[in-house]
Every structure is written in C-alpha cells, then in structure tokens.
Image 1: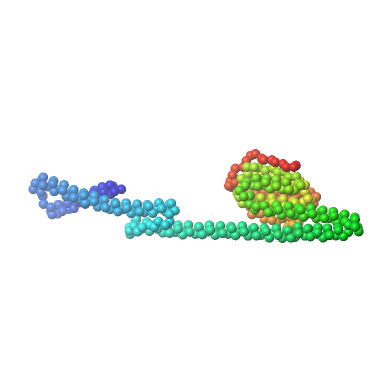
Image 2: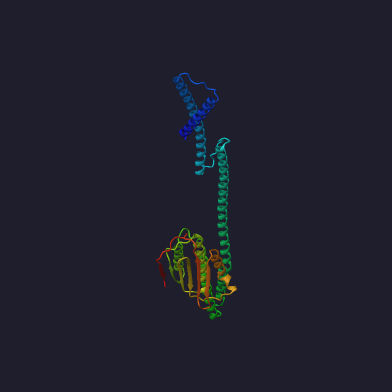
Length: 353
C-alpha cells in the first residue's frame, strides 16, 4: 500500500510540475537556457526535488491511512472474537473516521444484545428451577392427598374390621370369617395403592437414559414387585427429542399406575415402535376394563394422559369395556430427526409371559 501510494504521489507531482513549467513557458515567464548542459542539470535537479517531495508526501499520507486502517481492523478482530470491551478509537472526521464511529455504534448495540440475551438466559434458568421446585411440591401434595384418601382410609378400615373380628370371633364365627376375608381384600387394595404411589415416586425425567432403556428398567422393577406377567416389544434404537421422551415416560407411568389400582389384571403388554415419521406406543392389559364416560376420566387418569399427548402434538385412543381389558394406543408424529436415526432391529424381551 505504501509503495503504491508513493508511486502515485510521485507521478502526480511530476505531472503537476510539468503542467506548471509548460504554462510558465507558454506565457514567457521562463527564459531559455544559454547552455544546454545548464538546462539539463537544472531540469533534473527540479524533477528530483519534485519527485522526493511527492514521494515523501505519499509515504506520510499512506502511513497515516494504514495506521488508522490497522486500528480499525484490530477493533473489528476483537469484535469478531466477542471482546466487546475493546473500544474503537477516534479515527478522524473523514470516511475512515465515520466507519470507525459506525463500528463503535455496532459494538455498543452488540454489547446491549449480548447483555439482554444473558439476562434472558438467567431468567429462563431461574424460571426452570422454580418450575421444577413447583412440580416437586405439587407432586408431593398430590401423593399426600392420595395417601390420605386411599391408603390411610383402607388402613383405618382394616383396623376397625380387625377390632370387630376380635369381638365377634367367639359369638359369631361365620361373621368373623367374612370380616377376615374383608380384611384380606382391603389389604390387597391398599397394597395395590401403595405400589401405584411408589411407581410415581420414580424420577420425573429419564436421567439421561434412552426412552426404551428407561421403560425397560421401569417394567423390570414393577415385574419384580408385583405378581403380574409383563411383556414388552420395543425398538431399542429409537432416538426422540427429550421433551417427547419425558412425556411418553410419564404417560407409561400413569398407565401402569392405573392398571395396578383399578384393572385387577394379571397380564400386561407394552409396545414401542417408530415406523417412518412417527412413534407408536401401545399399552394393553387383561383387566376388568371400564366404561368410557366422563365420570371415569378423572379416576383413571385419562385426562392427564390426554393433556400430555396433546402437548407433544400426538393422538391417544382408549379401547376398553367392562370385562374386556384396556388398550391404550398413542401416536406421535416426529417432524425432525432430532432424535437420531431409527434402528431397524427390534429388541423383544418378554418377561414371565
């Protein structure tokens, strides 16, 4: 840049010098040289002086411009690296100076945007933490209500019936036998309620596990604690967005809890597959079934499952009737490949069936 500027300045200086000499000679202000040697010497001397002055000016001007451009480039590099504390210096009042002022305004605007994004990120983290704590408190309150409404009432009834057995055992043996049978039935119901509540005490999220692995662990744990045959058929390679996996996991928890509480089933089957652009979840038991009416929606957790399916844009269908068992069919469309590629192989692991 410097050499080019010096060359341009020298050429411009020589051009202006030649123009001035021509004009002065044209109007007779320059006398002819008496000696050609003297003329050549003076001409070369003047040309040399003009060339040196032009080169010096070109060097000074280009050095000043280069220094200002380097300062501007340095500020841009710091801005590119995210160092917003680097201030753009005053570069004068010309075009370079105005570019520097614009860059300074861009830097200030960028710093404001970054500060706003960081505040937003902090607020989101705080809201997420509050939502998590709120969910924990709400879940504890719900479990406390269910313990009071279901298990504690069953235990109180068992206690009262046991007291009555002690009083009637000698007087009416047949009545005492019926009371003992009632105690056994109430104990079984209370045990089912406790198992269902313990199922809800599992983590709300999958804790880094894949959905298939989390469901498999859940089913194996349930099968070890409850006298029920459980079979599952799942695509082990399914990868889904985290939000969808968490909702499906909670839906399965809710369905299993309802089965333990209400269905009196001794067989259960779960299927999880991903055909093309959707994921399909099927849960079936051979229990007593129920009537699909508004009164049953709350007691069987149907509304809760519907809300979760709606939140992930899916559809849910209940197929049931008294004495015919219950089947829940869920389909969720997958619009992105965020969850990864689908595995072609199935991992079929029936247990106890």
